[in-house]
Image (cartoon, rainbow, N blue to C red; front, side, top):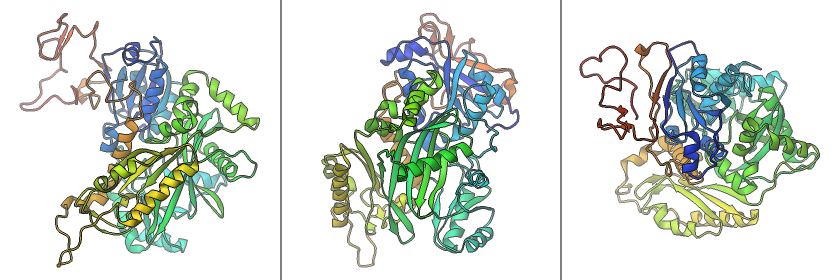
Length: 581
């Protein structure tokens, strides 16, 4: 967020030039005078990095906070960026640091934590974006304000209440008169983390306490819990890119769920064909999503809307004013083509005058479909039918069998030999997921059915027999705590698969130089001046980490040429914030 002045923005300039890195990694060798700034380029933001590098654009990374969740930080690769700017609360200072070396062509969010700051920086720099104050502050990333705004505009929204204690939550649940209810953090928490389905007061009490005890991806505490009605219906995802208030459907997905005793378990997430027939489910869905986007002030850029469609019609679950997360953009590009994916359309919008996007919008207005699928993608969330202790890992029992499926594309498993598993009741108790990719829906449906049959047969989850005292031997103690760590674990596993889909222009694995994990924070005694820390010279001849000075002898961390801020640190105290992590 914005906040008042709290010191300058920290900036680190990395040593490989924009065109130089693109050329070294096989990208377009184009020298441009302007840069593109990506705020929090984590998770699927890496695909934005990939797209802009393909086009030869110098990049600036802006980190909204250094207190970023470990699962997101694991997706952070600074190497493709000319500079990394760390925001310390003062938007004007951060904007000045962002454009310090060269003018900025565009600012956009790379992931959920960066949405608010991206809007603020774009406004400060007078660039294309969404007004950070209109139609009401916070409504594009605060789920409570989001639904209040929809209600204000006469659109269907969740009945909801902010509750600071379980008594308030129980009173609201009684007012709704139906169970279950949903308890979640007020601010967007990417990846579905922190969402609880509560079937009674006991579960409600536990969920409210859990939400209030946790922090969001930026490390901010939750003072209240958001309690909402449960929406019963089929859930869809609509990914859009907007141009001056006109919205283009980039992708559509559908969640299939299986009812359980305490709610539902995710069965699959699947691509959905476009249907431009008047009155079709897709057209009703798109019309409602477009109304929501307009009501929430999404004028330009990406959006990711999750909507439940019931007998009463569509209702928004949440909206993110950023791209589809994790593997979504890359999988969609495989199914519908690169020019249909959000990263391509965003690069076109922000740096090419929206030539492609404007043409596509004009074609849709004339009745053309927004997209056509050449392949079908399905993420199958595995479901364990019974509880016990695994005698074999799923990899050992079924890994080779799964990889032999005709439409197999990728797989991640969360359980190992000796882990205790419970019957799958929700997303977080799923033992893993499999990604399928086929030429038609029938092909992937066949393989989904085969996976479910193997799960029911007992061949996938091989359980140990209980001993005479009713327990199984060799249970890993960590298995008991596995459920609580699954949200972060699931995100890490998804991101590991997403990394495989990135070109060498943005991949951590293919980066030719060692990646610092964080930009340095500046100590408060630095004052108000902007400080630039440069790892660069003419080539790398004048850069030396060992003190001997390279061929030029121009820079050494052990020499007098590296000057710390005035004042000596106390005995035994390390200078804070300078160096690479």
